[in-house]
Length: 432
Image (tube, rainbow, N blue to C red; front, side, top):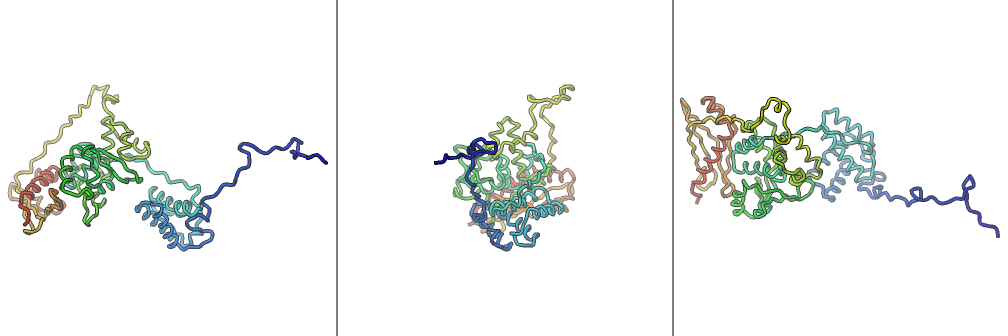
């Protein structure tokens, strides 16, 4: 019997199987192979409309937000319309050419990022392709947020003509909620015993709790007793719907214009002011992160760049050299009087809850009458004013001196107007 010969290498050393990281391994299962793809682009030739419908259906099954679905559908439709051929022919170079066309057309980095995300989700993530491999998300400009001071926030709240608008803007500043979160607020989300407000399924489909502001607690407690717990706090025009976020943005735009602060403030600016003022008051930044619902702490640290440091923490070398100290007692201009005025409120009809108001201002030569103010009460104790823009009163206000016109255009005047008209409206007997 011949001896068994063992295999050897070329140098005569005995052969041994590879070990460690060089050992043979099992084949990797490709879970994104075309067989597991949503649309098998290697074996099928779907048209662009069919491809988009299939991707949209898959996003619904995966519970993408409706806002994301609409944005991705629009981006995919634009890309495939520009491509002009079947989706299975799309290559990486085609994607680059499309992104270059967007940039040449004046699109910003956010728009280009949205289109790239839509293409990457549809082709790579759901169809197992690699057409966006190597394409980096465009860099975005790092801008500091617009932050209002506490005095400017109060001027904006004073400029809101109705109680609903004051409560809407006030809650966004007092709690730091996004505009899409505050309009979806229900009465059952408020816990007056624990003094918390629960935000259900906010951005990123996460729940969180924010503090209930003590300034609005008596008003909210009184109003919550008149409504069902499942009712929205800010009701929209259609029955069972909440207030549109676009309507809330218009409320903020009008209040900013009346207040005259001269800053491009939006509802999200109140959220920036909430976080910045908490940080300036010494609140821990991780607690602010939880209140805002940020996933990463780096998102919250941007407010450290706009927060005004306290005097005990840092002092300007020029102030130290000159001996000048900031006392925080800036002189405020004394509000100029508007003069004598008369407010009349009259119901439209006996059985109607709507009314109209007329404001008569006594001028030095003749009286000026401001009309067009509509008053309504959609809910008990919730008086709403529909005040026309100042452009409609411009011809009448020209008859007044500049001192009176300046006072009428101030937010304090609108606050007095809202309080006086609401008091006269509620003094009426309810219609029989």
